[in-house]
Image (cartoon, rainbow, N blue to C red; front, top):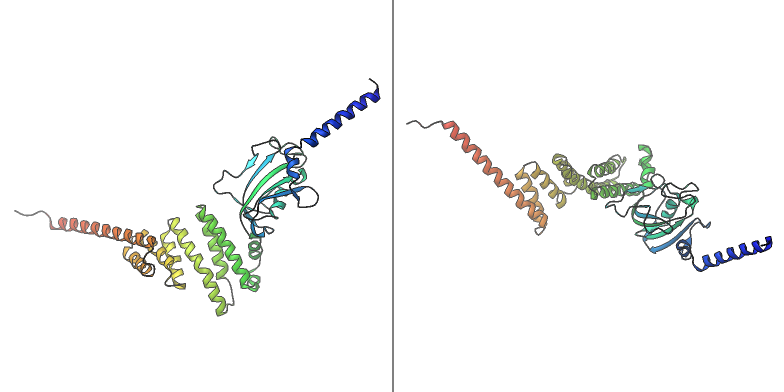
Length: 331
């Protein structure tokens, strides 16, 4: 075969392969047709499967996400969080190490589920990540934003000196406090009680260090402190620290003497401390405000039973003591 004939055969073979590839696009090529180029360079393509709500994820936020990463032609992810009962809260700029994933997250809203195709320069690069990711691999990520918190705002505020913090508008401080409390609530719901306590106490200390308060500011600060004291009281109960739980419950009652949650927390703490009369006093006061609350009524019955058992034991103990004092009966 002449050189020209060989060249023509090779060209026909290449053209045939291109036609086959065009008529039978790969899975990722099919996906590309329905995705948007979010950067304009083709490096990150996005398809919104289920839209979210609210503003997009801010810079330096902490995000709670489920995600799975796939190679082309693979039905099984090379990494996934869907098996985690409590996915880890990840901070942008620190915990999210894939450049494409971080940039993609910044385009998402709370509750959104999206797919991303990342070119190698936005994923694992030319080297890949052996043995799981081959070199120069395009990867697919499916991502769902469960929640996010603007922790960047918290970081910026905490980095200020106490004097600078006092010049920040109170509304900004309250936003920081709400974010910290949300962090604490997330930790509490995952049974990470020590972490939750740290977040609540940090928020409490920021409010307590606010200087030069007007009467109006004092009232707003008290209003922000109340849920923190209630959360701390419950957290200390979970940590088996009833005296500390009682301390925070009483602080809440100093702000709102009729708060049924605070009265209930104090009743729980007094029960753990075996101070049954005090527990009854708190719970009866709470019951008067919410007579049909099953939690209050059930705990009140439990306190009454424990109190009765305690009195019966005391009575039995004193009876044995007096019998011992009388000594043997003389004949």
